[in-house]
Amino acid sequence: MIKVLNKYPEGIFDNIQNMLSKITVPLICKDNRKGFPKFRAMVFGLIKCRFTKEINISMHSIKYPEISEELENLGKILCPPDFEFNGIYLLKNTQSPKHKDTGNIGESMLCSFGNYKGCKIVIEGNELDASENPIIFNGAELEHWNTALESGDKYSIIYFNHKLK
Image 1: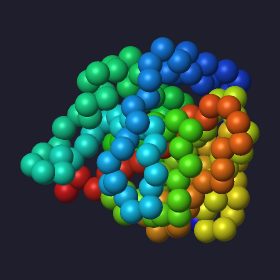
Image 2: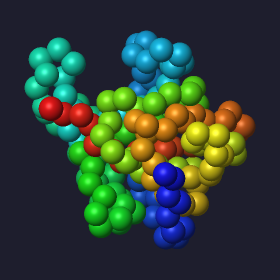
Image 3: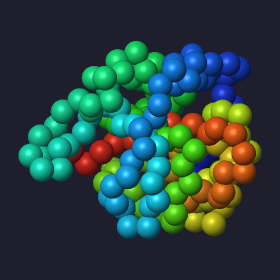
Image 4: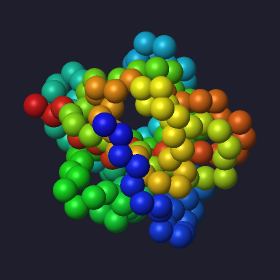
C-alpha cells in the first residue's frame, strides 16, 4: 500500500537545506548493495554495527548533531502521529536501481526537496513525485527505484525502522 500525505508546509525544508549547503554529503563508494552505483548519503539515528552487532547512535548523528536534531524535528512534523522511526537516511542526487529495503521493518516515509527536475520514485510501477508530498510505503515489501535526475540538486529524507534485533 502506498500513501501520499498532505502537501508540505511552505518553507519547511529551508533550515535543513541551509545546513546541508554548508557540508559535503559523503560519497558512498563501497558496493554494499548489488547494482547500486556510488551515491551520496548519511545515516542518522540508531544503527546496528555490521561486525559487533551492537546498537549505537550513527556516526553522522554524532558528527552533525544540529542536522540530526533538525531531521528529528522535521520527522515529528511530517510523519503521522502513529508513525515511528529509529533511523533517518539522507540522500543527495541519488538515483537508485530497483531494490527492496530488506533491512527495514514496516513502512518508510520519503520526503524530497531541492531545486531539481526528474528523479521521481517508482514504487511497484507507480511513478510518484515526493517533492510536494511525503510518501509512505513498505520498502521491504515493495520494489522501488528512481527515474533519472535531469538537473539540479535533490535531497531525499527517508524515515524508517531498522531491524535492530
